[in-house]
Image 1: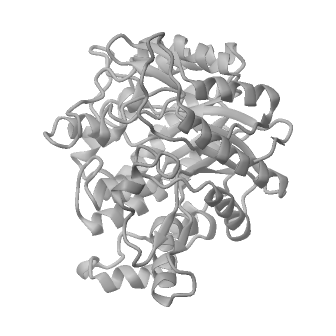
Image 2: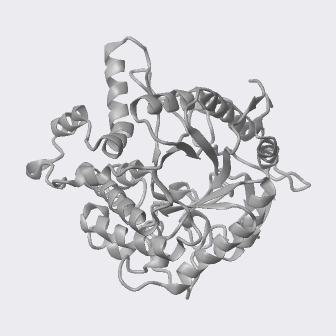
Image 3: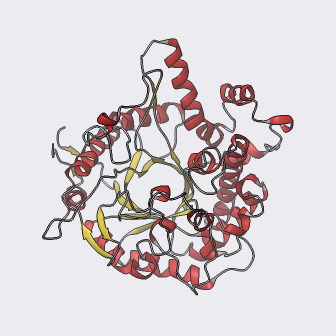
Length: 453
């Protein structure tokens, strides 16, 4: 590594999501979500926990905004909880819910922090799941109506909108593998859900353009660059293309090209998961709706895919914090640059933002209540070095949001995994900035990446 400067006006921020930090407050009018329902099923969350309290951000948001301000963050990416706004998913709104976000945004603006609002980060209202959830095409239209209501309420305060966070996770983890809510293991449901989420993105973009024509709007995709385990080996090369198609191109192609990749269409058909109905859930005009012009693409990057007969990494290797994070994800910062170069070539956008990047590790309080997290700090340094190199190549990478500002409810892992720049003592809700937070504060202030290795 060497010291590298970032472009002037580079956007430095941190991210969070509603269900992971807010908590559910009795009597505030919020309806249940699919994640409330999922947490209530025994065995679904590793530590048996739920999001009832989480980080109590709903009541402690001013404290958390101050942490962002103290770090020097120029932007904060957070999500709005659909069931907090429309408890039944559609129809009557909850004024207490929308008022919370107005107060949060006012606090951010007062501190000079730009709000970046994600409209959907996985907490679908339970009432809509009972009607088929994302398998039901009508949910796409319900989402567009919800998005329009939120934009109408907040457009005087918000100029940056993200429709969806990680449609792959919604479709695959929620409907194919069952690891996430609603917990289905149905490959056809995964394809239906992926399409309806993307359709809802296009519909919502149309509503955003009509209601806030000067706003910046786009979508966030989680993307993993794909590599063959043995370059030049046909089987591995083919497996890498297949992984890329399933993980990346199935979402990039509709958004940027108004089409699904033909090789993946043939692959899914060969798997025999479509049944007699075939692709009838994709209707005429859907793809042109999905491919609305975006002002930016949000990119969530954590690791890469290595495909072939190499097999999974040995547990001994995963225990090495210099090679794997606490999630068991390989640390491969070069993949971030490889990914952005590929996107600029194949899916050119007006701007790219890293909307999530970070690492989970086991953090422990010292006797003087400090958190030393050198492995996370190293992770950030290596990846921000790649960010600076991408910018130097002239690729329009305009900002970086660290995941996450706070330790939080990490979905099916409960509270066992800590991604935060700030440690949360869940028993007391005390916030303790980690060493990585203090280092990133220096980086933001200097607008350059320092060698810490």
